[in-house]
Amino acid sequence: GNAELNGQRGTAVSFSAERARYEVRLDKGGGTTFGVRDANLSPAEEPMVTCPICLDARLTDPLGPARNGPGAGTATVTLCCGKVICNPCHEKYMLNGINRTTQTFPLCPFCREPTGYMDKHADDRLERELLKRRATQGDPVAMYNLSGSFDKGRHGLPIDYQASLAWAALAAMA
Image (tube, rainbow, N blue to C red; front, top):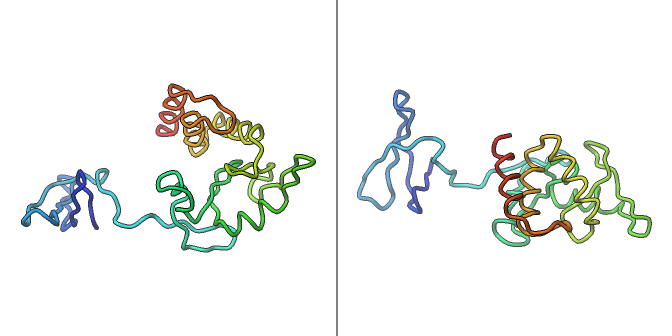
């Protein structure tokens, strides 16, 4: 496996069980090797996610748009229950049932709650309520998303860095 060490790339060449470390050879280091803990390694490729509706296994990071700009990811996280689904299934099964005049949303196929999404089609009030409810029930994905909402002032929430850090810490511990 590959490792990233403070911006440097390397290849894991062996594992020492007694030291619980990988021996990593730097790509640009003249053959120098270092002992690195597993927690400090990052994969060379983005993790793949499978859509539970169509079973498409070619999804990339659902948080890609947050990390790499709009359109970077091929998956969406449902706000109601935190399931990761592909964008075509999101469009087909989730967004088609939204009725803006009656303020009704389709039911999620997983948890049967009214859906709300972090995009232009959703109602901020419903999104905020669903996100807060899931976060207070202990859902780490919802806690992380709520942290980002406070950080960026989304879903009608004020920008509050202390609340953002508190929700991020809770998500990390969950």
